[in-house]
Image (cartoon, rainbow, N blue to C red; front, top):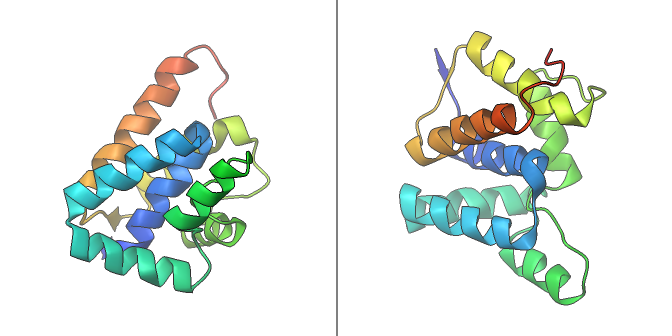
Length: 139
């Protein structure tokens, strides 16, 4: 079973958040939750790597965009594409079903989470999405 790197798991959490509605308050809440759950040093190391690679915007940019009145998700377009490529998700799928595809892929990919706070957030978000849209035609 292949393990996700820390940075990939953190990016996946922000990818999921994007599809759940990444308002600035939610970004800040997830940022704090992951930082506390993973540990500040380990989390900041993953975030620095992701930011250096252009896969996330970083809290400073997210907060600056909020001040300017234009919400900005944590994951960049490149970050979203990175997750699509890593998990072999089709980027042309309908956005409201993206978490359904992600859930199915995670079940069959044999990828293992090593960061429990990320795993818990992803599973919780997928479950909430299913509860919010119980009658939609899920793939």
